[in-house]
Amino acid sequence: MQKIWKVKKADIALQKKMSSGLGISSSLAQLLINRGIITLSTAEGFLHCGISSLHRAELLPDIDKAQVRIQKALLKGEKVLLFSDYDADGLTSLAVLKPAFRKLGLSHQHYIPHRLKEGYGLSEHAVKYAHSHDFSLVITLDCGITNFKEIDELKKLDIDTIVIDHHSLLSDTLPPAYAVINPKRKDSRYPYADLAGVGLSYKVAGYLLGDPLLEEELDIVSLGTIADMVPLVGENRIIVKEGLKHLNATKRPGLKSLIEVSGIKNKAIDTEYVSYILAPRINACGRLGSCEAALALLLCNSEPEAALLAKELHSKNQERQRIEGRIMDEALNRLESEMDFTKERVIVLHQENWHRGVLGIVAAKLTERFHRPAIIISVIDGTGKGSGRSIEGFHLFEALFEAREYLQSFGGHQRACGLSVSQDKIEHFRKEINRIALKRLLAEDLLPSLHIDLDLELSDLSIELLRQLNLLEPFGQANPRPIFLSSNLKVKSKPVIMGRDTLKFWVSDGKVTYPALGFRMASYFDLINSAQAVNLAYRLSLDNWNGNNQLQLEIEDVRPS
Image 1: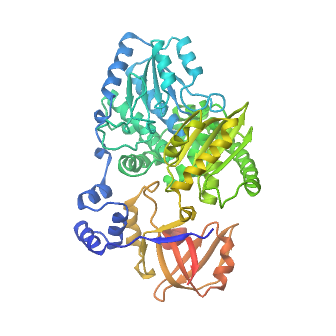
Image 2: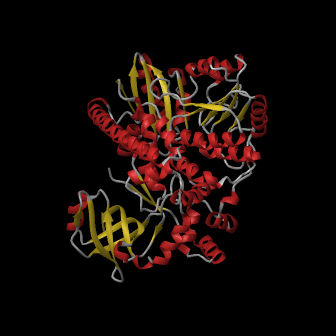
Image 3: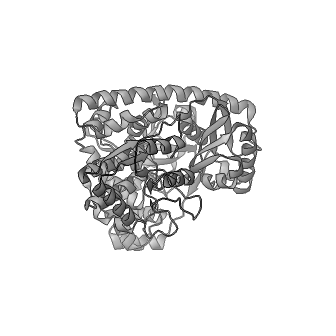
């Protein structure tokens, strides 16, 4: 599917003001403008922020109430249950708060629901467990904000609940918990609403311990933040920027072993290595069943134990990939025969006994492939559990809220969701969600687009420009690596295919010549081979093979000139 190239319009006047005021190139100035950073003070803060720039935790709603209740539990020797989500964000939240509670001397246990047996969030089983084991305080991590019924049941059993959750609220009404720490609350005074669950747990831990920076936990916090795909701007960017330094120098046996077994021991770990290499291995156990091994890896202090746990997570990830591949093939076959892409704008597929642990990944891949929202549902014993992913312009959580009469439960945010639906309501839900999409998505919204930051001459590129681009790191959601466009470039060499699917050739604007690499772009061989000149959309990187330190163009898309 051909992408629509959208080149952002340059603001020359503001560009000059930012460039002269900050002593940066006009290219970097425009990149800041493209990210909504349009004053000298905000630009200075973005480029040179540090851990001391984080907001004060006491601004979080109910954090003072939570501290009072936790202190009461400590003084009275109460039993406290930490209940977390089973994904990397929830597990890292546990890995931050458990050591903090140990330092406080607070007796506690943890409970991680089984994804396949209990599903997301507080369940009836968890309520019964807390009651039967005499817990008087339950603290939810990375979940709980939508569990009104379960929290009310706990309250009736004289069990208090503290909710520490970053997910969207269903309404302005809060669950009947003792304290609800969520920066998305309507009455929140906290300046930043998009912290990950682990970011909130980090804030709470620092507040309780009187150490707001808690730097020894930043490797874990950055890992969970990247894994949860929250926007990497504001506080999240600061946490990840500082945290990656700690992650690259981590002394934790578990993380060191996971890095080694993943084959990136001698790499400079960045957001992409975390997103595509480390996070999937941490998530794999929870996707297939119990995730206690992943938590144990994050917390263990023994190198031999860490090595065994890392191998287990690596093996589970390979199993996850096999299951995911099979379901993806089945889904693609179903789409060919069942879906009319001219009439339906949301993919909704359901199947008996699809493995529920990988539905979100399959939905994400279908969304990427067909550039439209996708919801994948597995039906077991008459009940469907599903995961969804979306595209820009279609707020998935809001759409589910509008279609809620057909759902048993749901949660999520703009780009991702989870839901439960009775089997006999799935077809009604499919029609309703597509009716909603027909109102909110235009036909052009379903065409993939490539957002290009700057139109540059090839001779404008330099090592110094790349160094300035690195000031924008870490890259991720809402702060992507910049994409440039250079037009009418002469193809100076025949393309070659390296490995299985990497295309390489050289291009020139008549002044300078650079290598261009297209990862997973071998199918473009004939186009490049027959073209005399091309327009390239690319990211700039450095090839330091054998100490060469040569600029190279990582192709995002290519067209004949």
